[in-house]
Length: 82
Image: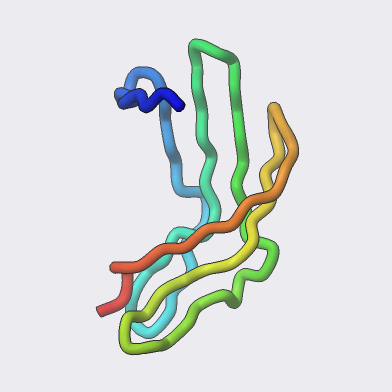
């Protein structure tokens, strides 16, 4: 596959929803825009309670995509809780 770096002019990512967990703030929903392509995606978690309080705290779980396209995916995030 081809790897291409995307600049902030090509893709815009906006946090739509933040969940407060253990004193930290974790973004759990986003809007991803590609203005040149008229592409607008909304990413939301299927289960908002997907935080795992392990040695390395993280959020992981299935997400759904709606907007210009519909679909599903899987998201893992670390580094929001210390």
